[in-house]
Image (cartoon, rainbow, N blue to C red; front, side):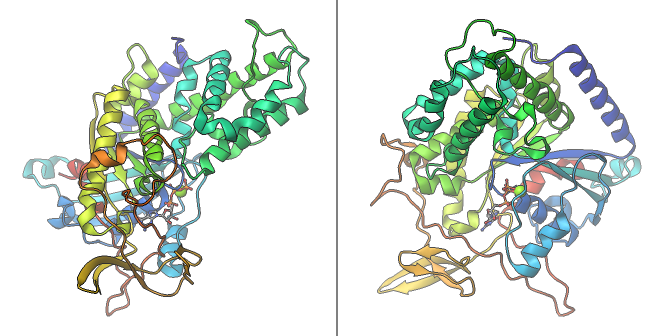
Length: 490
Ligand SMILES: Nc1nc2c(ncn2[C@@H]2O[C@H](COP(=O)(O)OP(=O)(O)OP(=O)(O)O)[C@@H](O)[C@H]2O)c(=O)[nH]1
Ligand SMILES: [Mg+2]
């Protein structure tokens, strides 16, 4: 395999890491990466994480908070001047004041939360400052999936892209692009408009995969779906070509595409890994298992593939200093299924077993070792409460919340103002059931484990007698906090 980095990259990472650690000696800090495919719940997770710490939320399983050792948590200026700040205040305003979910975010952002605490051990109390800065880094999971490109030539990338596009699940979605590509001769003279048309058609196919109800996992290049600030640049205007000659003729379309592909790796992929991923200490990977469960076994298999690929990015690679350096640093990874508030609590453990099973297989396949991996089903913001409804002689467990305007169940359409009790359905007792592929990628009907999925508005927050807003309600956020930062507050 091609060497993934050049010596200078390695030297720079070593230097960055070293200076980061040296700085950490004086004011301890922990860099926590928060990732997941789009709409997985990253923004909501970070917002609730910070809100619950600042407002002293109910966190019984977060030991430092439970034992009253946290004296204060507050936002501080982030260490990196060139990274957009995570707009915490805007997201809180949306969730708490307007009761709408925050806007989708499309790039990387960062926020520093500093926690002042009293150490549990007298020895530590004497020597440590009792202060920890947590740098939360929100970045799209799609960008992680670009890592394998570093080891692939333009020819490999092209060949694989066509192979995947011809698979039955993707064939119809990729047809227009493949037809256009068939009309193009790689050895013809390079032409900007041809390059752009091919790029647009290829990107439209990638987007169609993503929007598809089968929730197909994302294909690289990640920036084609989420360009960030390089949109329209040559490094982001290329596409795979079919029938490539061994060597590109200078001045040909083939040569142009190849150069741009290499530029993408040099100017987009490498800096992203070097500047952001290589410096992380801990990582949480959020997944929307609920949506996948709703869409059937094909979508579950696809989600598993995406998790495998994401976890593989944190694998220590032998002789691969880039991954070596950062995976040695990341010592804990949490894979969390969000939005558990769409289920009755009796199903939370079942959701967790499904995710555990999926993650175990992904960990084995990704050959991941060195980092401790845990699994959790949580809701960063709990939008529902539980109740029971009598139907004839039966008493059914229900969840109660305000469905978002436009959501429907059967013929009923919700207006966004009325609280409704919904029987969400149960997840199967045995995790195996959801992994059985019945040979189709479409939703199963009749007696399958499909859950009833309606999106709810964020909850109305209670206020104290003095008018102080309480923290955002959640499910198992405290367990996530304990695993991710608990030991640094011991
Ligand atoms: N009920 C419930 N819904 C949630 C929760 N977290 C996220 N959601 C829903 O999922 C959507 C996406 O959440 P975000 O936090 O914006 O997801 P993201 O990963 O930041 O998405 P992008 O920025 O688009 O990549 C929200 O608009 C909510 O509808 C949760 O804890 N409970
Ligand atoms: Mg977001």
